[in-house]
Length: 74
Image 1 (cartoon, rainbow, N blue to C red):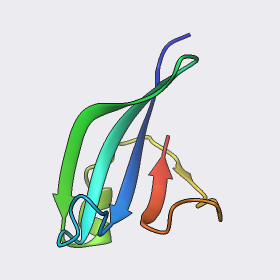
Image 2 (cartoon, one colour):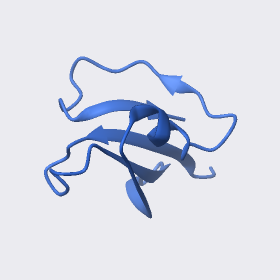
Image 3 (tube, helix red, strand yellow):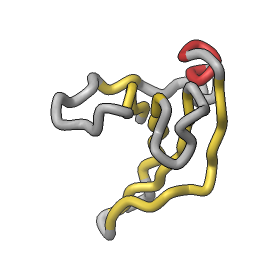
């Protein structure tokens, strides 16, 4: 099984509390999820969404998500 690539947009995460939006890339396989090393910073949600590769699908936010998670794309 190939890795599934996802991106998560965060608002003021603990490691970058002064940054309005942080976008992180992730790789998920049957072995688990690991950070891809891709990180981008944005001042607006629209700018953050601009870092998401074309053709990805925005998952609905899960009520159990950490409050700093804005949305996840797969």
